[in-house]
Image (cartoon, rainbow, N blue to C red):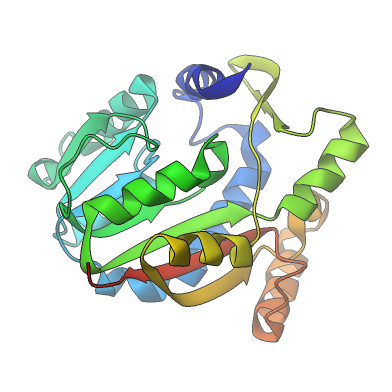
Length: 251
């Protein structure tokens, strides 16, 4: 599937099985690692928050449960419908506003938000510079921006092993055949430079999932032990996922 429309179609097709698909084993490990390094920052997030590429609401729901008002935005209508179903009976419906929109063209006024999340989404943007410029525009001065990105060096290795194009990554699910979509990783340093150029002050760079894209072959207990060790060593080179926290400088 090509381009932005291909990304949208994939997540529409995966929406109903995304949270529990046995084929997305690596995605679940990436999510768990990411959540651990972001946990300390969640208490610093204030209303209103923008969750770019919210998917089925992994972070939006947690923030809403804490009383934070969240605008949950995604390119996939079916993923947003899954999020809305999860909200039923949860008692936080008034805290979540689902918006169908594109992260490279945010439909919001300048300085609308106090915080922004973009997790496991940024690498699907074909114009990442434009996306960061939009993040800067809609954030208020002092607002926190949190972005995660896959280490491109790890993706290059996977592409060489699978002999797939340089800007694609494979997906598989119960509801779809093996599919290639656009996804290009970055390093945390690249992301920090991009944020700095668009009015952000980098606050912290973190790496996680240090056993990279081969983690499905490591038993869970060993994976957890090795992950704790390498997080302490702060080895960015071997981290499959880089997470950057930055603050919007005064405008």
